[in-house]
Image (tube, rainbow over all chains, first blue to last red):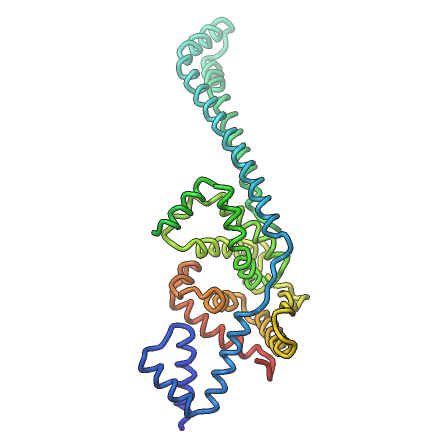
Length: 159
Length: 187
């Protein structure tokens, strides 16, 4: 028997384990194993290795499932509270924005009158108005970002 | 998409606590074994096990029921292992193993087999365990998924976001590496 046949048999055997063989190739392989004791031993050894691999004993740490279930439930509660808080924040932010838009003309007139009365430059009055209008929104954005940052950090996982 | 996976996807999307408890119970051995094979480090595998389920909770709405749940679960676990290896600035998954400990897995259940069988199988299993630690983690991973979890090549490829050809070549090379890592005379 030539060396090529043994190499072919080993290649076919590996292929049968990984992706399967055609019927013809499988028949050739079976026939070869009948005739070649060396290859048959090699194959038996690989099969035993795979058996050992399949039966490697791994016992799970005590209470791991229970501890995980508890942690997941706690995180679920935490997330539910956070999402409720987020909803309230969005409602308040929306209301604040709506009220800001409605009151803008009135507030602008107030700022203009105050600027005129105190002889403040027009640019300062305009900046004061923009600041008055933008500060609540900036606070809301800061609160949302803070909350998101607070939520993301535990995702970093174990160190 | 089967009714079962559809129901599972809906439950995950709702963050159903009962369903999550059930899934943790159901997949605890398979997931822990996968993480242990991948990291070779029991403490790290335990941490990652918990993190995986936290991610399942948070990202349950992303499960579209097109793939098997276990593939999605293992993909989450795999990404966490990769994240850890990146954070620790490791060149590969290999370095996650506990180099000081050569016994990452637990001893077999001694009551289930005879004394002679136990002796032979224990020797073989210990040889395989030790050899597994010597081969790269990406070989350990595909060997476990194919021969322990009995996953299909396409399924493994989808889980790893890699071509089927990569999975095949890793399996061939992994088998060869495992065989050559075994001590002389074992198995």
